[in-house]
Amino acid sequence: MRVWLGVAAALGAVALAEVLGRAAGWGALGAGDASTNRVAVTFDDGPSDQTPALMEVLSRHGVRATFFVTAPACLAHPEELRSLTAAGHQIEAHGRWHTHALLLSPWREWEQLRWHPLAARPGPHLYRPPYGGHSPLTRLLAHVHGRRVALWDVEGRDWTAGDPATLARQTLERTRPGSVILLHDGPAVTPALLDALLAGLETRGLAAVTLNELPARRITLRAGLGRLASSYGF
Ligand SMILES: [Zn+2]
Image 1 (cartoon, rainbow, N blue to C red):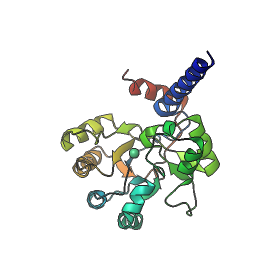
Image 2: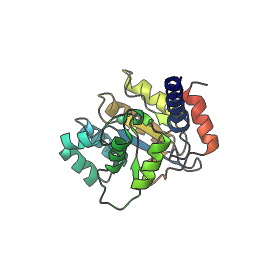
Image 3: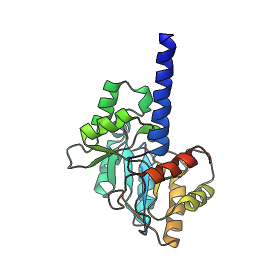
Image 4: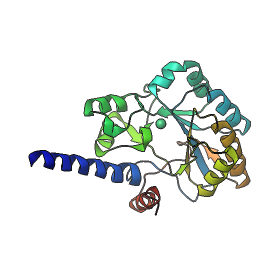
């Protein structure tokens, strides 16, 4: 009986973390003010072999973006990390490990949140949890380490095997003023998608800026409900 109570409590905690954390995102940073003409383009998982191609597209459009990098990727691609910093892109943390929060023990999550590629730079430092997965403990540890959890409101879906023009069009359809767009530094499709996306944003009069320049705002109760609905396909 006691075992089953424990299992039920664990499942309840996972469900609560999934709904309140990942899906609703209450209290984390989400999109910016809808009355601006700005949006932010963000890249997870880099740096990678694709970083120079992404930087070429960004530079051609005169855009600075935000890169959420992981510790293993920074170790593997130190040159690309230096180029990103030198080009004025915003560099933030995507974790010491690319592991979902629910699979990390509390002490590993402590280390996960502690790591930041530019920890010595004055904050605030942002942390984007891998897969967007985070729990109330993640929020608490982020607070202790001086990190702010940063999510997004539009997915570029560049992890699918779609055609870049179609993916860019679908991304643009979901983008509104203030949006934070999630792309990845790694997939082969992303540079072409990015090129079409930035051209589309220019046509709509939307300026792509970094998250700090947007700036990203806390996800309110109402916005969280909207995220919940779209996350579960309502
Ligand atoms: Zn990731």
